Length: 120
Image 1 (cartoon, rainbow, N blue to C red):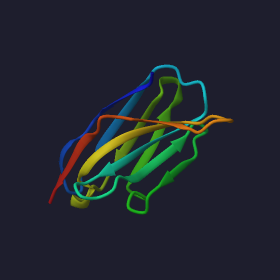
Image 2: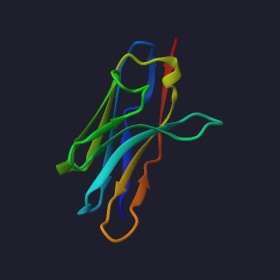
Image 3: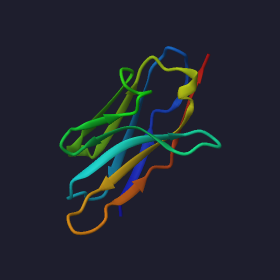
Image 4: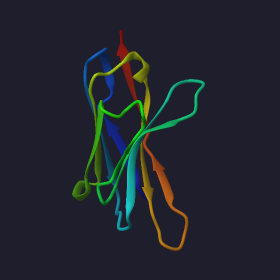
């Protein structure tokens, strides 16, 4: 059973930076995608950034140029460096791990979420 443990959220002023971390426990032997999503009350959870086990990255338009996702595959850990934070980045950020299989649907795991609050 895979578990995701997040850390690094908090309160920061606009223009500041935060670094989120997410460590996956358990054995992950298949290819996978690790990513960060965020959600505000009343809205759907949205993708912020993702990175494959091969290192390919994908960013939302709002994250491009400000956020950087990286991954330490040896430690099954993903990071999200968030710079130039804006009040609209305020949300609960969730780590996601999607384990890919060849002949069956992928499996998603979620972290418990970490609050990021950006004050103006």
